[in-house]
Image 1 (cartoon, protein in one colour):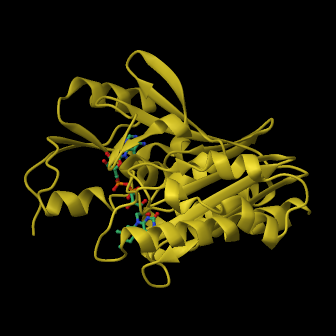
Image 2 (image 1 turned 135 degrees about the vertical axis):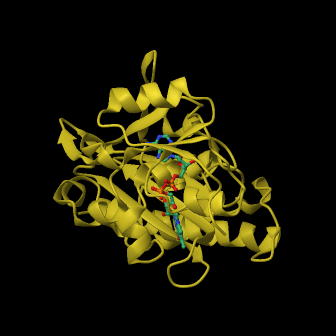
Length: 281
Ligand SMILES: Cc1cc2nc3c(=O)[nH]c(=O)nc-3n(C[C@H](O)[C@H](O)[C@H](O)COP(=O)(O)OP(=O)(O)OC[C@H]3O[C@@H](n4cnc5c(N)ncnc54)[C@H](O)[C@@H]3O)c2cc1C
């Protein structure tokens, strides 16, 4: 289906992009277009103005600043896969990006677009919560920093409001004693998740986050608290026991709620074991 008529702007600076987004009611940022153009074709979204971020080179930057990995919102999944900064500081981001869809989606799709969509089956929302990321958002009044746990608000809903531009995702750089893992069951080899879990450990502090069991990523804090001392398969299984009973996941054509509960537990065990192995160096 053809697109409905829509105005188009291609700002040359971030300031100009922020002005365009705040001045026009019904303006939407256009990143890689992998989701937005499809939902526009289906008439599920009808923005009046598309503000194309494609010319904003500074939003594509991937850099390390002190102990923070700074990922521009327009960094494509392919650029994350190729990035030496990511490889050195938080390689899980590249590993996960490499499992998303196909090369065309990875070449066009951006990290910012992936998380602004907040499709609960996407790869990055639970991972970024597990990594303790912070989202940097600009509007005409200035800049605000939003912890990943507060960024995801509902299905297809985030803390990015009309007039806002997500500019950067800050991820603490991993170091000695840090390890990350992600596991789950996807629809096909490179499909979206039916259930997922991301885990991260730094020293003895664990973060375990589940995807696809609610509208937003869910932190399994009870599991985190039980993970202490030597980690082996038996201790992780014990920590995850009873997790399913605390969840209220949806049922759909891909999985019943009970199956998702079971997959959430299995995914959490695998993600934690992977993170623990990697933390040993
Ligand atoms: C066939 C296919 C398969 C896919 N499979 C997977 C998968 O298995 N796992 C997965 O995680 N993802 C998957 N995706 C999603 C993909 O990875 C992209 O992340 C996603 O399509 C959105 O990224 P984009 O850059 O194209 O954003 P766009 O489509 O351009 O934008 C998406 C939304 O985010 C908003 N937005 C984008 N950037 C900003 C910004 N900087 N500030 C404010 N708002 C912004 C837009 O206004 C729009 O509402 C798939 C996509 C396709 C088309």
